[in-house]
Length: 579
Image (tube, rainbow, N blue to C red; front, side):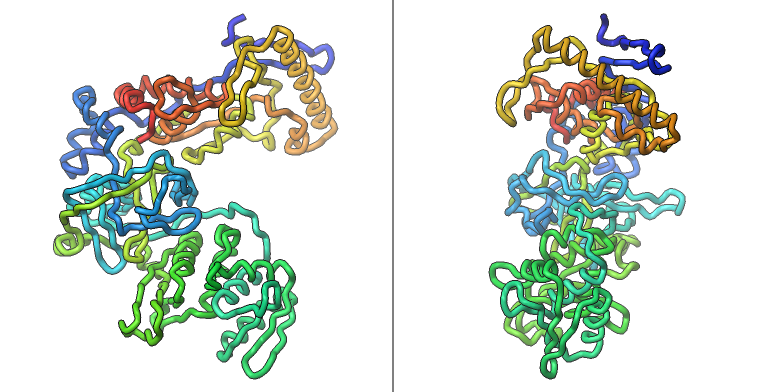
């Protein structure tokens, strides 16, 4: 029997339905706006500006060398003073190892932490583009790409990754922050809990680990803030002396208060709290500002701390609440209200009007704000699946990115067993829309491994190989898969017949059930997916995917190779490494 033909068992005499078993998956390219020329004109805008429009639809076969260069070397880089946000805080580029998880922005606006596919750290002696004004500070190689919105007619404006050199030719807005954030650790404490923890970080202390938090407060607004949120949680606030207040809390709060100190007893935001949801982080920020924060007559909010770590964490909190913040370092003797002996860090929340600063709004602005300067030293970057990074220089953050392979789009229709989709959706580099068992009755179509599926796993974790099974093992897999799937679908039908909701009845169906989805991604995201989900001898980095998701990847690659043959060839030549 061909592996591409489904086998069907008719069991209508028992249950009134047919169960279908398939040994293959289905992949169809249903829509595409992608060709090799898209990559070329997107890259040539770096040097040709608006004249690059001449390359739209040009014969890409004459530019194979450029495609190979773009795949291999076309990567924007940062100078040594730039920092990048990781899961564990800000890192200067010389300190980055490449093993970190980096804060990125997905095509649909979600803030996601992703591991690097490669680290770039190399000497450079040549021109760099310097963009600097009150709310912008960047020093990048000319090939670099920045997340920006070009000044155009309103109906033509859109945010995209544009070459840094484009800043010299036209006016843009940059993105200092913003993005959608979802809690990835699951802390579910009430809002007032987070507000009080932020207030504790600013003004609280503990006499001993695990003891009740103590606050020394002299301002009425601080006392009222503490009283308000303590009452919301049902906690007692006990005065002690003229300005001391003891907060009688639950044990979990005291445990987190203990985590608010680093090894040097400096205040910090615990990692679990830092990765909470946006509503919780907004409450945390409210508590911080109520303690050591201030508001100017112009409604500018500022937080002052002597801890550079805490300052950077507040900047991260601002990002995850959809805003942004800048940090200004003031050394002793610099004035501006600084009277102590330690360096002070002023964290200023950007007001909405400053969140997307203008760059080069007029020709005179471009002459003063965007410049080319010679740089001699090392430059740095990493390649991440989303193609974007959150960086800062001089305490001023911005979203940046650098791949010309993102100016295209492909939508695939995929039919595969559910367990393949669950593996697929770990790649948050695409948009997905899957059929729902809540709204339609699921069909009795199940995956059954074909005779060519290797069944025996040999080796240890990280070094598995798979070998052919015996005829007896294949027969066992076939027999048990069929029996379980038939009985599961029969149970599903019995519940539906009894009036049970589809979303409840479906819970008995196994992961081998076929589902369908549309998946949309660009060429760069697809190359990243293929690098991880196909096994090839010519790959620079070996991958050992599960066979079923590799079947999907192989069919997607075949469609893409026909659509963008030159880009696919460059991908192969480059060792199947995404640019």
